Each structure stands twice: as structure tokens, then as C-alpha cells.
Length: 212
Image (cartoon, rainbow, N blue to C red; front, side):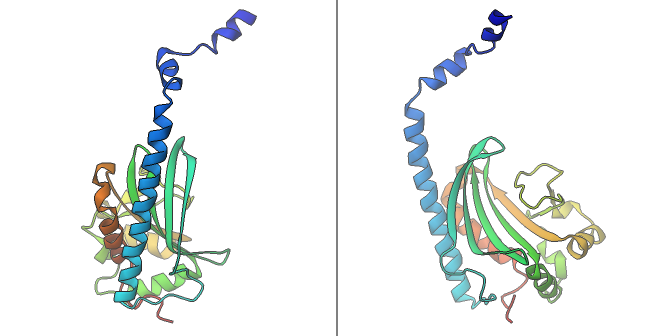
């Protein structure tokens, strides 16, 4: 029995080779720093468009600094996140999140909940074509009951273009939170700033959102 238990700790050749590879961690650190800089540049792109279009938000929404942070374990893999603009409270959530998920993609996500969602629904209804203005832009909408998941499996996100008008409007009217999202491949990293700015403008109903 003791022998059998010890066998479970034997390393595979791939595992043995990997734990000998010190260089990986230096490369990871260097790449992480560069991605962090890309997110900082994305923040400036969004900040510029907020100022240029004179988009106003409630005073509690941070439109000045935002926050960049990193983690090591979203579904087993590292990630970096920029939240800008942002506001998180028990009563209201308004956050535009730009995310790098190691080995997967860059994504942009608008998360509105609580008081912010009430205002978003009002603002969206003023748009020229309502929720249908979001079509044909490769935008996904969250169908999960958990607002803190960011993978693109069908139990979390569905492409808006795959939903009928009735299905889409039902989500917007009845869910306790709304999350809209887009993604691009890691190899297009040079364009993440432009992609984030484009997504930000797509997700907002119009430039007078929250002009209260």
C-alpha cells in the first residue's frame, strides 16, 4: 500500500522537463509587464474618448484612474484586468473591464447591475434601434446567473446575433445584471487599445448615458 501511494507522486517526463525550466518564469514576468503597459495604454484610449465625447457618469464612477490588477488562477490560468471606468458597491455596479486571460484571449466586458442597470435600461431605450443596435458587432451577452465568469462557453455567453429580438429583450428587461462582451485573439495584442475603445462605444447606448 505504501509503495502504491508513492507511485502517485512520480513525475511525468513533461512535468520533469517543465520544473527544470527556470527561463519560463522570467519570460512570463517580462510578458506580464508588457501586457500591463498595454492595459494602461487602453485606459488612456478610453479616457480620451470619454473627454472627447463629453460622456458623463454619476460622481461615484471612477473615470480618472481605474485599476489594473493581476491574478494567477481564473480556471487554472493567470490573468490581468483593467477596470476603467468603474464603480462597485452593493447597490450598483458599473464597470468596463478589459481582460487578458493567459493562453486564451483579450476581452472587453461591460457589467451593469443594480442602480446602474436601471439607468442603463433607460438610456438604451433612447437609442435609435434599441438593443438591436448591438447586432453585427460580434458582441456576446451573458446568460449565466453568476456575473463573475468570463469564459465564452454557451452556459456563460451567447452571441447576440444568435438570439431573436424577443430573447434579447427578455434578457435586458428581466436579468438582475447585464454583461456585454467581445474578444480578440492574443496575437492581435497590438490592437487592444483600439479594440477596447471600440467596444466601449459599442456598449454604451449613446454619449448622453447617465447624463444626470
